[in-house]
View 1 (spheres, one colour):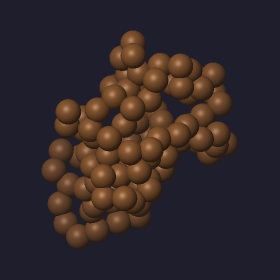
View 2: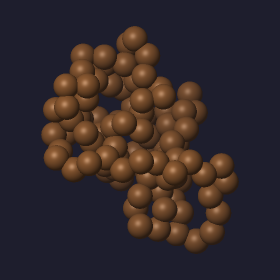
View 3: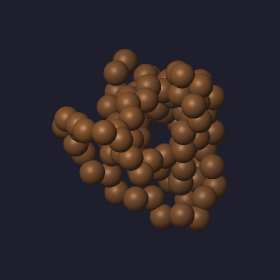
View 4: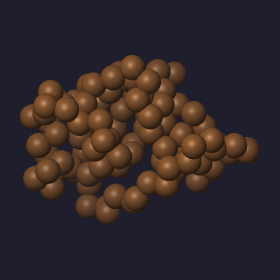
Length: 98
């Protein structure tokens, strides 16, 4: 998967965490993410607010970089993640799978 930090003046929306999103309109999308700690420094400097990643099924996603904060380690963010998107294309939940 491809990943890039984007410069974006939009304010990142806060996430609502849903344990079991159900009903029509929800999408579950898996994505492999690899962001180095150096690249993450753009987030802390305020130069990047959005992550753009290619999902495992080929779709291109854009979501708030702050949603990855719980998964940041000394080496950055690495792994496979599951994103749950609502009918309005808003990120509702992100979980690390591996």
